[in-house]
Length: 291
Image 1 (tube, rainbow, N blue to C red):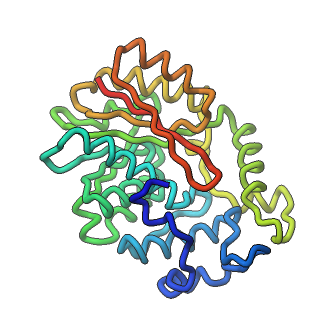
Image 2 (image 1 turned 120 degrees about the vertical axis):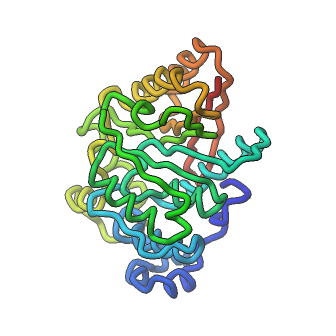
Image 3 (image 1 turned 180 degrees about the horizontal axis):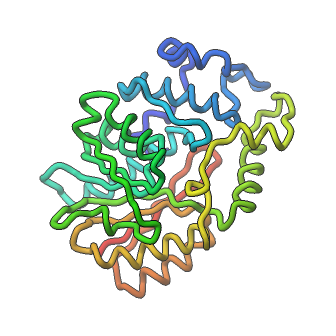
């Protein structure tokens, strides 16, 4: 992970359980003698997140509705730290302002951006339930409330329009786009991912049990054309706001989509970068572009 990511070291479960006792039932010692949790169980990840947010980021009372994505925090923090690297080249003298496209019910990116770097963050989503939850999470403390604003995107066709106000400037935008092309593909991908996450010494779960343990609304998981088409649309729409955003960025889950994305960006003759990230055996990346 990024050198500045405080989650580079193994979890200290004694400390984490101390701040969140509800985590304790999910912690066990695996065949390698290591304390861990079963990351395929959404409740386990939820309680781990609550503990991490309270222990390291001074965030209490964080929660999400059932069946919404509960992302592990270390990987989300990595994206934030690498964006900070991008911004460091800009020699910004005013307070940094960022826009999270698809903030979700968890509001993780605005929370991390505000707590780690004191950025001012705006989170946007099309789902009203997610907006309600993100607003609650983003105002859990006075410090968060002063740095986080949540906005509702009422048009499924628009990404930036209706969100970025006239004369408003963002130093960056970020996005974790829905990467599946259909509900069926999302279900298959989820099943494969969660089976890979399971510990060898954990009891076998049926397909139904695994799926029930996973959170995620349709708009969080899939859209027509998958992430490639979503990012292509984002790139096209970014032209209109080229003078109001420093760096546009988006995660790209599927490496094979990079060629299509580069082609679209090169047509616009923008400056582009691909930042590779790594969390254990998982490889990820985000693409950044500026006009």
